[in-house]
Amino acid sequence: MEEVDVEPTTTVSTARALNQKHLGFVWGPGDILVYETIYKASGGSAGGCPFVHEVRKDEDIYSPILRKLFNESHHIFVGLQRIREDLPSKNKKPQFVSISKNYRSVIRACMEELQQVAVSTQDAALATQTFIFSIPCFFFFVCDPPAGSLVLHLLDWVRLHKADVDEKAREVLASESPAEHQAYWDVVISYVLQGRMDEARQVLVKQAALQPAARAMFKLLDNLLMKMPIFNPGETQTLTEFDVKWRHWREEVDRCLQDQSFASNPHLEDICKILVGDEDVLLEHKELLSTWYHFLVTRLLFSHPTVKPTELHYYAQSSMHMFLDTRSVPEPLDSILLAAFEFDIHQVIKDCSIALNNWWFVGHLTDLLDHCKLLQSHNLHFGSNLREFLLLEYASGLFTHHSLWQLAVDYFDHCPEFGRVYLELQIERVPLDTERKALKVIRICEQRQMTEQVRSICKIMAKKALRNNRLGSALSWSIRAKDAAFATLISERFLQDYCAKGTFSDLDLIDNLGPAMLLSDRLTFLGKYREFHRLYGEKRFSDAAKLLLSLMTAKIAPRSFWMTLLTDALPLLEQKEVNWPTALTSILDLTLK
Image (tube, rainbow, N blue to C red; front, side):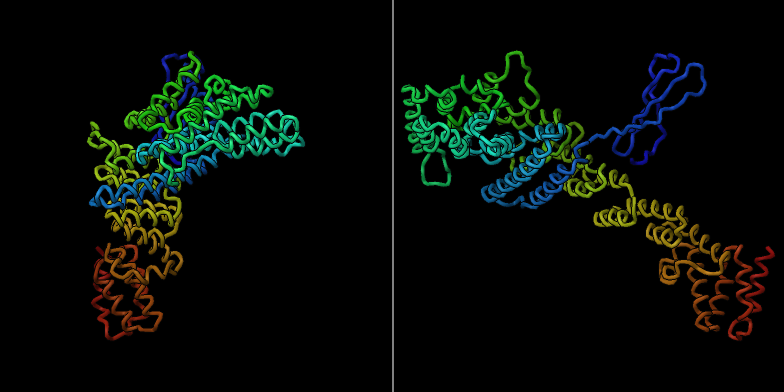
């Protein structure tokens, strides 16, 4: 838990009942600490509650899976900023589509990991829900999908969302008798609803093997599933040719229903009705569809496979009204998806900003749309545009995390109006737990010419080192901070230690002060006095005597150290090159004063 920098303030309600419990709170660098207090009307002291609760603003940044998403999306974000503004739009479009694809890839990987733990963890399931609309938004708004391929992308999205069918299929196929498993038909129909005909056929084989008499009926359905046309934009087939082929196949399925080819098997008949897009039958399998947008995609697959993006909102609205109960109130997620299917960019950003508990999605989506010139960026009342505001909020949240704060620096760097101001404020709140971390923060500041922040961090580290009695480290930090007063204080401590122990600590630092010793008179004296000892140890008595004389006459030695200097002079009185009488007279005159 991070240390708070203000005194706790207690909130007390107007009710003044005896020993009434209340909540107190205090703001920390990124979180709120909540604690219980007891008000005693008599004015006497009351026992406090030992529990302090930490309320975090951005809980998602503490999820290991989401941290991976934040790290990978950061690299994509930085790459996007490097696309040159002066390039023609036609040259930038493929790069923006590639960026969109990269974002969708990291979201997919994140969702797949979340779904692996969602079975046992409700929070992971909820987190998965918050990302379900992010893939279509990154796709629709940037890629402008053509008719035909749109349904393919929607199917891929739904399959990612409903990945539990594969787990259920493994359970069924691993049983002793898969065709008699209670979930067998749920698996088959789920695969059909997702357009996964090959998987559905493989599971149907188990049932056909148990019913030799109905083998012709299973073979007929297998043939229909196999022949179902799927548009492939990579082939030479045109959309018109696909549409003709699909209608022929649809007519064949219709004939099978009219001929009652599957009347003796309700399950096979239901599958056949699904293939012709029978909405009543689809709605009978609400539990397998689970959401109205899965119902939408299945409905489009079997009834309108060549739907255009501009028509999508109509089918989305009707699908939601058909799927949801008349008494049901649409969830925020429903409103966001509807706005996405209507290509209402600003409404998506607005609804997501309200509904989501972090700024990752809106920040990155708005940034990409702004680069694509697809976002009419309104200036906000405090001077920043929408893109910058959302990126600043997202980066500020990252700064409360012990390691993700480093990512936030790049986001601030690419907010031209207020990014530097935010960075200057946030960088000083980074907990300086180790010298290595402090050096990392300083390097970031120095790269951006943030001189005041560098000095502030160095002062903090110097004081922390001094409290731990690490004089060498404290002196090094104070020199780096160019803090003459603190350097003087630490130099005094070095001299006091010398008087007490007869030796200097941190000799390597003192011997290599160089020009830094000029920061303060006391530091200069410390460096020169150590040089005197070095010369004396090397038996360069003449040089040592001259240096000691200069220290005596320069009047930079602390008064408490004068007797020490006189004592040091005694062995050197025989050095004729030094005018000792004059020097000693000067020292004695100062002492008498």
